[in-house]
Length: 397
Image (tube, rainbow, N blue to C red; front, side):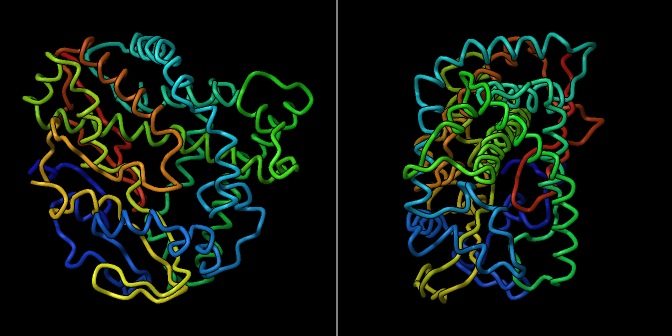
């Protein structure tokens, strides 16, 4: 098993430390939430949006959520609404579009690493954050120079350390917390609204312009739908790659023999990235809500109950993966759920994989002695929904 003693992961992510859930599906009395831990059970739930609904989650939230707050949010939609909106961006992330980005991603990676001075670098600040932010910003048509604004908003959105899906949380505390977060990220939505208004006046060759002009059932997207849609693409479009890249470098550092094997044979990098997604799953938890009573994992989940699908735990299920607590860069096949499954499978998965492959390849080229700085322990994102390095200090010599 990989030594994780120096990895400060959130306490809810016990599987990272090799702790095994007692059952594939269980009820958490403290949070009032059912959790799916098993791989087969998680895959079943994600493939059945009729029973395990995304839209119904908001109905079970302890407080009322304004309709505009989730309008156009792909993550909160069920068929047929989900399919209609997802179709609007499918072309923007097609295989050809993504493949054509490889030279740009390589140039950006070299430019960002050219700025490194001395023999130390902090990977997230230097590369893992700016690289995917610049790429997704350019696709959307946003100024890449605004990337520090984006990072600040993301930090606020994912700063919550308690279970965000709990149904037993104090109502007043939750209202106060959500009000504070809404105030903090309000500028993000105003920022996106301003860019949408500008594209209505002056369309360009970018994704925001395409969404502004798109129609669903003969209707243009409302401002709320457009802003939320772009917000999801901007945030999810970079934070997954940020965590993926940092996690992969961290895992390879813990296994120098596997790192050196990749240095000698770069064809193995994609397989190593898939193992990173399994071993340290960036978005490790998804929320669903049951629309009917359903038997799963030997228990019956009642109707109208909040459900957490623990992708991180499912990706360590010993019924599906041999030696699940071992990082194996040559693991194949690797049917992990790191990008989800079913209708909500990450639309940006091909782009994240490409960015990860190109960046790891260049890091291996440029820094033969790259290793984690022993004087600075890696830190992780505080949110229980995420498993990813927040800071990763490295030495290059």
